[in-house]
Image (tube, rainbow, N blue to C red; front, top):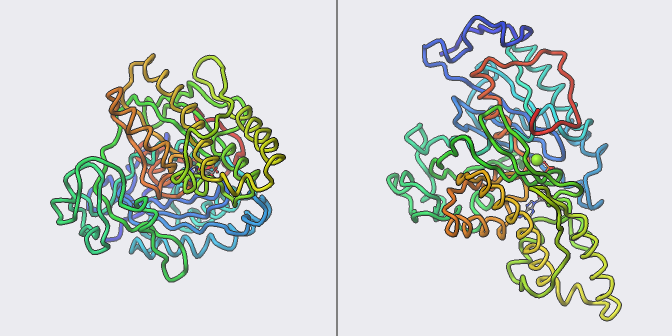
Length: 429
Ligand code: ADP
Ligand code: MG
């Protein structure tokens, strides 16, 4: 069935009197295309009524040689990737672009050149289709990734393919079991670091999330979210889909940034997070100790740790030029433990003070095994109900932009064509 377009995209949502497509009956469904291009991942995703149909990401290997993201190269790569990525997302979702109800896009924060590619593309496509645009704060997207529903998990069409794919599901919930997959009560993701290992290359070489795990329980408001990425380390009090208060944040480097810089100092690749994570699994977390910050409240600091790591390494290298090679696993494990301890200490303090037991983690660093283990440990120790995202929703992805857009769509909260990209914005905006 094809729905009639009822929304004038050039009119602000608040003045919109006609109900959005999908709320008019007739079973059209609300199809949201999400577009993410804030840094070095070009991603597009399609949701139907909040259920994920596709999530396609093209990562940019071009930056590896430079040990960090080169903005100009990033925007050029986005330009090359955006059309085939959106095309692949629509194809994988099995829909025509004319069926889309709205386009949600990352408006900021991020690299201006990168953002402009996604924002301009979203505007062009929305105008050509005559559908509304929804601007999404990238940081809200990370937090709201916990509300993405997986197609197929509760009889929404697709059968779960866990068994076919040989995955051993360990996520909470009974659905997967009922559907014949091999499940274990409670626990983490699919074996071998979950969805990430199940991501398949499609014919165009883009990553697609395809490990259909059971529908995870969503947090209820208010909850705390530790938002840890390459650019942010924040404790966010999430009061609703729209209302988020930062109660603590880094006063200098972000956790991911510190990991990436320490990895660079060790001569390891970029991004450092996954490399440090892998090495840390084979090392002794108590082998070395590094400086921890001593600042008041719920704020973080990682620059002292980074300097302490650098200076310690410099001294050790004077005595043994092969020190890094001899000790890289222990160095990685000790660095990871220090960062996880710093993050968890303030998070625990905030949860205790605010008497909140629902605690989530989001952002690229939430892929870290040590941090995930710490969450499980704190859940046992302090009775927390924890929410840990699937691996495919940790680093930048369009599924999280689409779900944030979906909630705004239900509120008829659209943005005008004139809305510019912004490189800086707070989680609270
Ligand atoms: P941003 O949106 O700020 O660019 P992302 O949310 O994409 O950041 O996260 C990227 C960050 O996550 C990088 O600093 C990267 O090193 C870190 N990261 C990714 N995987 C892991 C991991 N397994 N352990 C620790 N850090 C990780
Ligand atoms: Mg991010």
